[in-house]
Image 1: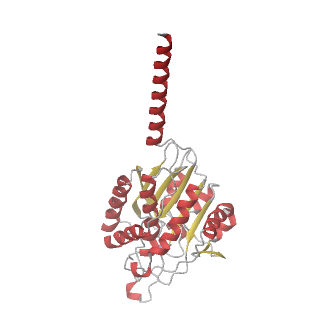
Image 2: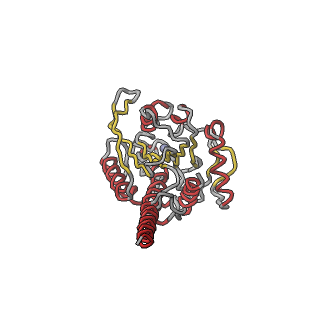
Length: 308
Ligand SMILES: [Zn+2]
């Protein structure tokens, strides 16, 4: 009788242990395997944004792209939040702006921020034709490309739990300023950083203008000077994967969404190919971009996340 009781207790113990192990596997106590970046799908996200039209603050497209980004992040299972704020320009004008945020692996205290601006420039002030210079741009590369890479990463993170927390932030109001008025640029990332309170990611990676055909991402100046360890970690992944899109060369220093985080003392880098002949012109259209460029950047970012 006693032996039978022991046997039945052992049986209950084994069954309970099996149930716990199965639940742990199913609900993901540990992270998943490194997913593949799908560059076709990413390029589709670039096209979606361009089909909306110009997406500068105050435009119809600006509202539509906000709804698009919110619905995509929801679809991918992100913990979604929006951060509306007033962007006050040096002219005294106020822009209604919104940062859009999707968090993955909320349980992890160790966090990475991946950011891209989703607003497009309200005027093609670099267009060779002076009559075009007050017309808003489509921003296939300058706007849509970085967002497209991060949307595909978000899609993957929704299916495969990353080993660290990942916060994807779509910044507004990056590209509104007139040349020579730096205060009117990077409004979204500046607002986000100055309202971060206790939030401190250990790495910030910004992607901007990464969709150009035959993209060449040189080492942006502030990233190189201030966040070199992080930059080297990213470039060493590209070297290991033989991704020649990442050039081991010095690039220019740029006013971009990484700067507010550098000012907070957080390692932050800007992945960008600034040598783009269609920059701030009406010719910044999807035919100048390629899925291979998005694929190289997205692949390196997923590798980076999974090697943490
Ligand atoms: Zn721009």
